[in-house]
Image (spheres, rainbow, N blue to C red):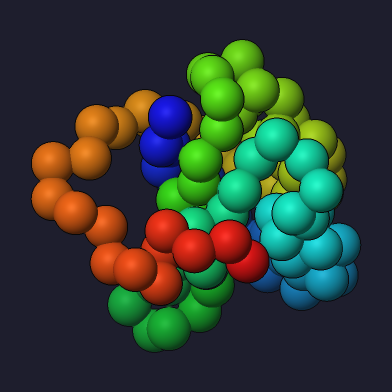
Length: 102
């Protein structure tokens, strides 16, 4: 199944985001587990400052996807004011780059 995740940062979390970014990136890029990152990156405010997270990934089921997000260092640091996980059905063929293994 394919999933998208949007996490919006609490105000004043830029320092925490920067401090945990390396471990977050290692977590989401780990190709040894059942979740495969397709694309993602920081969301930005009007001034360009990082203030959220977008991820598109593949996981066997919703429970596995939720466990993956709960283990994310950003979540564990209490960074998000809101989190939204949504499954989606592919309506248009994904670009080849997104379907290849990392």
